[in-house]
Each structure stands twice: as C-alpha cells, then as structure tokens.
Picture (cartoon, rainbow, N blue to C red):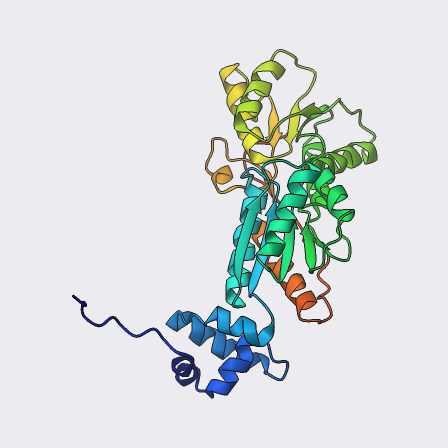
Length: 336
C-alpha cells in the first residue's frame, strides 16, 4: 500500500523564485559560471540553504566533468585543532555545493598513504586537502605523482604555495613572553610528540622567547597531547622545584598538569604558573581558568577549501598569509 504523498523536494525553479532570479541564473551559480555577480551568487546560495535544495550531482557531474566531492586525507587521532579544521572544511565545502570524503590514515607509512590517495582517486574527488601534522606524511606525499589538485593544511608555521597554516611559532612565543613578563625566569616546556609539525613550531616559539630574554633553557618534556600525560608529568615534576612556570604545548596536557600539581600539594598559580595552547572550549571553565593561546582552526579549514577550489577552477589562489594567534589571559599564570 502506498502511503500519503510526501512533500515534493525543492527544484531549481523553487530556488529561482525565492532568489528572484531565472532558473538559468541558478544553474550558472551551481556550475561556477564566471559571469555571476557576487551579490547574485549570495542570493542564490542563501535560497539554496533555506530550501535545503540538493542538486542532482550525478547529472551535474556529466555537465561539469566534476564529481563535486573534495577529499580530506587526515593523519590525526581526534586532536582539537585538526578536528576543528575538518569541521571548517565541511562547512565551507557544503556552502559551495560540495560534499567531503574524509579518510583517516590508520598509519603514516608510505604504503598506507599511497593506499589512501589511490582510494580517493577511485572516488574521483575533484581535489584533496591533506591534514597531517606529522613531517613524514608530507615527505611521502612530496614523492608521489598526484594527478589532481591538493593543498596541505599544516596547522603550523611553514606553509608554502599550496599550504595553509597558523603562526603557531608566534603564539608559543607570546605564551612564553607572558610568563617572562610576569617575572618567571625558570620556565619548563611540556612539548608535543616528536615529528609533529605543531609540536616543533610551539617548541621553537618557546625557545626563541627564552633566547631573546637571555634565559636558560631546560630540556623539553615530550608528551603525547593527552591530559593523562599532563597529570603524570605534574606529579613527577612536583618532586623537583627548579622551575616556577610551565608552558604546555596544548590545553589538555596543561589541564592534566594542573591536576597533577594540585594533588601533589602545589598551588596554581600560587606556586607554579601554567600556560597552554589551543583555547579548547573547556579552558575557560577549569579552576583556575587556563591562560592559553587561541588559534581559529576552523578558519584554517575554510581557507583550505577556498584555495583548493580556486585551483580546481583555474583561478588565481587567494593570498591569505599565516593565520594569526591570540593570547587569552586568564587565571593560571601570576606574578613571580
């Protein structure tokens, strides 16, 4: 038995009526025609969003020779920055009529990377965004013959012509300089894992700030980005009192560190000051509220889509530069 008629899916003519344009204009917007004025394009995209219009991608691909799918190659394990960037990629792609196919690498071996790239090629993606914080992934990709456009979202300083990055060296320098301005001279660094671009960038900013202030450096403590490691480090470090402040390479380790200090009887910031990096949502709500470095990782994802689509469309890439970071001063660091 056939049920009651379902509501009719919106058509291209419904979009045209709502945007007050012709259906040919809607079609030109969907097919990225260069003659469309920005204000007209905006009206049509708004109407598409309101109606939740979904074009027939198979038919559209026959006309444009595009799949309208972007691939994301991710070599992360759920860290805040990369996860936020993927959300930004998906939002920006959806606004441009694209869907996203994300592949998470189970390992960063040359074999695993090659297999993932070949899978995306079989899906006929129009281009890929590589979100891989490990240096070795870029080394492997640099030696591969990739026959579709791709950009690298490095989430750290050092972007090239097809890379997008945030200036994390400057952010780490600002965090360390803040501690120096508070009168701290013995500052430890709880670093991220070896081979991670983010970890190396944040360590470099820390070292640059100490060098410029003519302060002694300590060997960095290599962590794994987790709060559990920070907690362990806090308990171990409480046994030595040759420092007064710690710059942690991410907020999760900083929060775990404060927990470990607290259980060992050290007060933050009374006995030890702590600064983190990332500005995760909970950073403002722990006790004490965490002073940290804010980076708009979602914007990095949106920028990656803009640059990739420009390459796909044969347009000049937008000149965006490094995304600036900002120190968010709260309660976890105090005067020495």
